[in-house]
Length: 469
Figure (spheres, rainbow, N blue to C red):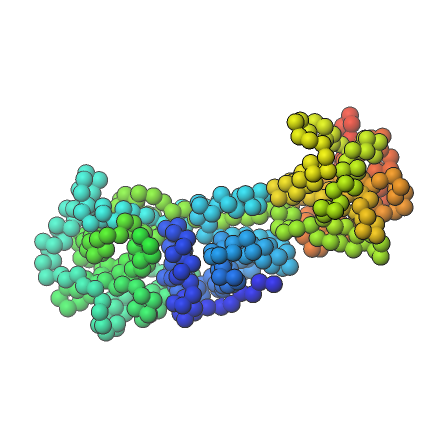
């Protein structure tokens, strides 16, 4: 079972950075500064297995989401995350802070999903060279402001922290906050954690810049560099000093002369801040998605073995079962009510045991159909399939049993136990089924299993079993 641990300054310094470097996604969520400042707010914790890292962050009262895994063994970490979620009471896998590169992979891994992003979360990414010169018509206004600041505040000095007394920065922050009306929990956290970052930025290897005017700090910035990007975690200035922000940004960008990108992070939904950041003309918005897995069958790493009684079990299809499965599939009499004719999909493929075996494996990997093999004393005698998954956390069920073992209650017992597994272990919401109108044994079985009749068409009766209301 995956074990998540709380973390603090020590872990941030010693563990996380190599993983962020390898991601190279230009998102401030993959920085030490973000993990430092928002650790407590999101009750963030981490798990590290086989040199692979993920985070779990809380939001709301009891909701949490994972980070896309980072490191050497992504596949194994995903399998652990899925097991962790299936073992939880909620059984609702979510990922947060998903960048566009990893979004595509999540969609492939979990085909039954939905996702969204909010503009309030998006980072503003700029070309650093544009801030160094403010050249061109787009930046004419910024050039003017820089010149205006230099002219009006000739004695202002741009400085980089060496070993000054940090109390001058805390004094600045207190003065800056006097002009702020703070109402949200996020804003309160940002104020408190800014103070903490001021005390510890040098331990994290960050740079601190400030503007001093008449022996007073009037602007402060704390920056982190990862790969080819500057992350400006703290950027504050006293607005009574006209044109201070363009001047400050220009000086910071010029300090990092050889860095390509400048990330000024999100705007938290503040309209004024949004207008200001757009006015600096970002080259790209770094959107961050919430990703939800909507069908829990997508969380299965493999078909489990489920014991029905001393003789009967459900298992995955094994290599040794190929021939028996082939014979099950080509039995025309047995499959007349199966509802699927393999010949329609065979085309130019060779009809042999490998064809059906590979079909089952591919269907599972694509999360399309899940085959539970019914075995009697380890001999294949039938199959229960789950398919037609939807985003309502439902599936459809099919079943067949070779003639020798029919009318012995095997199908009923096997499906009944599987239903219990799908309800309690997988957290499935409902199972749908259909039966040919003339298939009386199948209709009787569905009735016995408490499936509710829904409606009919010219060919089928349709049924439904609610599992978790």
